[in-house]
Length: 105
Image (cartoon, rainbow, N blue to C red; front, side):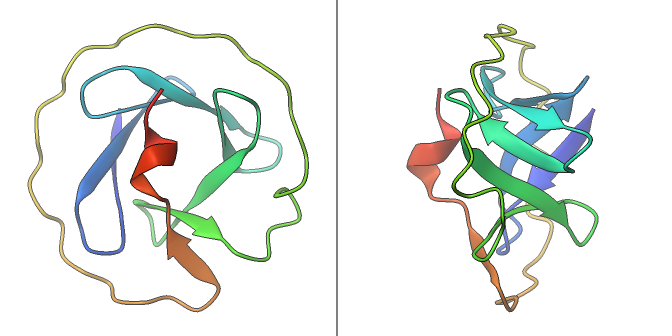
């Protein structure tokens, strides 16, 4: 299990067994290992891990216009707790924080 944060250091998701889960435990996406990206529950590009533990959206990603299909819902993994704020990394060229409405099932 890995805690994932936005650029401000806020806990936004957990990466558990190849699946992306909200801090509440609900499945919100899937990891595509061959592309090193996360997709949402509808199969659209969601983001990728940068700087070890930041889940961010790459503005020029070639995956933005691809639909990878529905991988199903893997359910709820439970709450792993709140790790607190990890610290801000500031703005990163070419990357944006993922809008909060995309990080809900």
